[in-house]
Length: 168
Image (tube, rainbow, N blue to C red; front, side, top):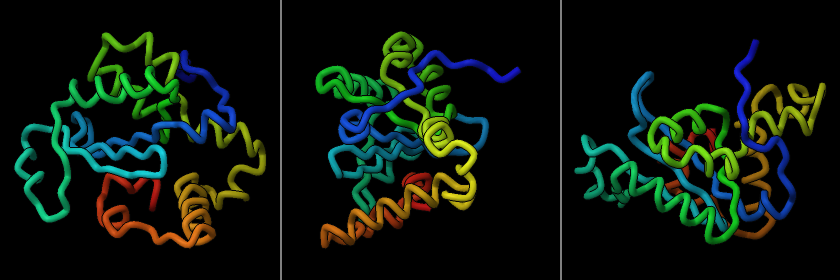
C-alpha cells in the first residue's frame, strides 16, 4: 500500500497564482544542497548547505542561508500571504518534514504535490498530454507564458540545476 500524505489534494486557480514553488537538489540520500524558489514570477536559487556556502561568492550570485532559517522564511511567507507551497512530488514534503519537524502541522496545511495534482487533473490522459513528464509540461507552460508576455527566460534559470524540475 502506498504511503498516505495528509496535505490537501486540491489547488484553486488563485492558490496556483500565489503559490511558492519549491524544489530541492542535492546528492541522493542526503540533505539538499540547493533550493530553487519561484513565486510572483521571480525565481531565486538558494544554497542551504554550509559545505557549499563559499559558492555564494560566485558570479551567479546565489544566496546562502542555513536550512532552518531558509524554511522559516518560506513558512513566514506562506502564512503571511496565505500561499501554498508546491513541490514537484512528495520528495520536497519529506525533505521539509525531516529538516524542520516542528513545522509538520503547517506543512500539512500549506503543501501541495504538483505531480499528484497534475495526474488528478489530466486523469487517464496524463501521460499523453504531458508526454509522460510533468517537467516537460511545466516547461512548456513556462515558455508559453514568457513568450506570450514578450519576456525572455532568465539565463540564470536555465543554468542553475535546482531549476531542473521546473525547466528540464
